[in-house]
Length: 426
Image 1 (cartoon, rainbow, N blue to C red):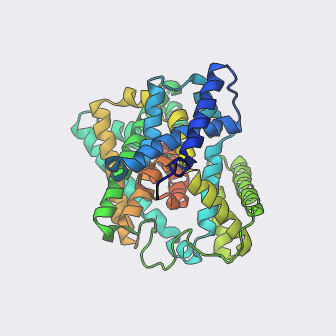
Image 2 (cartoon, rainbow, N blue to C red; image 1 turned 90 degrees about the vertical axis):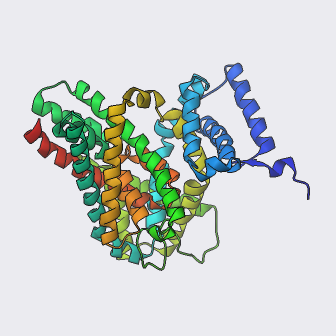
């Protein structure tokens, strides 16, 4: 049967609709009627994301190597070369990480949807064991980073304080910013000067982590015995997010799921108000895990969270990746930090995190690839948005709850470590 035009899809958009929407968007730009709101921001993200997803789906070498990460990377390249109108970029920024903040909505939806639909055995069995590969990754990352710094002439102290620490420390807002304040209070150097150096390493570490996420995905494909394909622990009969529910779908279920996610998000922020040293996401994860372990959430509510996750977490991925590339992938900052010395030591630190999380994760029964991705790379990336980049590149978005534990609780652990080391080494 001959394929019709409307059967050809770019991402989730039929080709004729994609063309019509693209023409309308360009016309709005030319007539000065481009406005910034929920719909226009989502439209720009969707058009760029869907177009680049089409490339991924139809260029075999891209699909089998860089995969979904190509969407954000290509969009970031367009912005770097000024090929995206400024008001389109602004619309994406407001939609993704501004007043609309779709990124936060996306992450909290994944946290609720994946944790609530886990088999309770997953949470109970994994439990405290998850911190074993986190500490293993930290030991190897710090150790190899210090060794590389000493061998390459910058000194082991500098390598730990200004390269390994910020890379493993939970990103920018929860890592580089408070870390610069800690250092400044100890050595008296202007925190802005310190921050610029820490932020450069955080940025570079994030990109190196994305690269190795792609590599680990390929390793899992080549060596199936090393991966659970999204399941973190061996011997579990039910994967996270794969429980089945015997309910008939109603659109109001999406609203219920959104209400649950909003409540969880606000609960985390309220708790963070009283304990600001701990990120709000950590409290959000904690309350969802506790409710699941205690089995106090009605199955219908779990189902509602699951359905919202299917919509936002699965179907809106291409919108998020297009928007992240336009709004938050800073190629200029990456290029500025990309000196041979920085790249080499950053790579060694990230590899150390991978090795430590792989070995220690295997010791407690985790699949090495999943352990290396979550307890390794999700420590060395740039926090929440870095988790999305890494998990997308590794094609394991269902691991978001574990990656958030790494970024938030793991990042908090690194801050404590760095504050102690600062008084000793600075």
